Length: 196
Length: 194
Image (cartoon, rainbow over the protein chains, first blue to last red):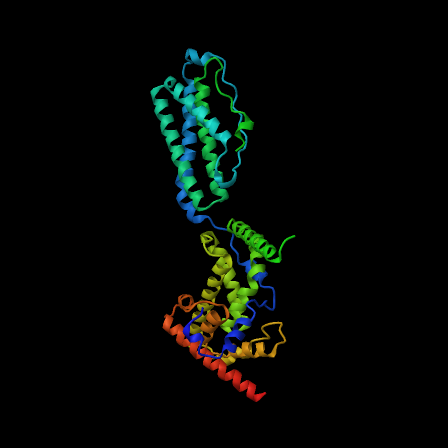
């Protein structure tokens, strides 16, 4: 702020200006008028380009359900006559800070993914291709939603979409495991492990 | 035992942390958090608007506009500057936008003498010199007044004030020089009259 032209006038004027209070309360409360004009927080810019990701998640889930349904109708191979895999139980997950999923989710996902690699060969080729496409699409959607969350941390819509995408991925992985399970060796996903 | 200086630093740090939490909540859509920010900053914003416009009703409009604009822009607020600094810039923009609308409506700037008459006691101070100074600032021509308020009262550099007002740095300096001359002359005339 100190400039050459501030030396020109009397020092007392500068001092007097600096002594003026910075803050002056208005004569009336302006908040009610301001509050009346506050629009609910908009997430439209993110929503617009996220609809494809959300739609992809829905399509993939629907597609996976159809695939699973078709597989169930096929003549049961020997492996599928074995006792059914333990029932999967999901808990409603919640996000921790910074939208990072907890280690329990990662462990469950890793376990199912490893199991998938071992079991995917048991699926008929068309179902296998469909499954691989679906998982790739789900993971792409998750990555897009994660990127949007980095720009808008804490956005409730994005968090919900991401949660759905992750849970759908787990559901697809788990359904493959159930379909191909033999001798009851399937993995149980316990609700307590899904606390994210 | 805590030294007074240390205590004030702790308090300041706490206030900054509290404000960050309020800003984060408001960004996520909490009107309650935004109201708390309004309560913390309305005095500064209104004071700036009142001095820049020299009109209480216009200053209220600008203050409202500044907070509404801040609410809309909060998602883009990255926190590089303090919230108060960011809000200060929004308030200056609100005053300038209001000035443009006003000139469009009436075709010319409203004479400062008219607006100065509407300026109420701007502070609770009973200091006659302060009131004289506030009244003299209010009577300055708009351009000179805005530069004087930003540089002389709110401590901006000429570069900052010029950028905020959208004028050249040289213009800012000459406006400040003019404002000081006018102020000095008016305060001296008042002294002689009394």
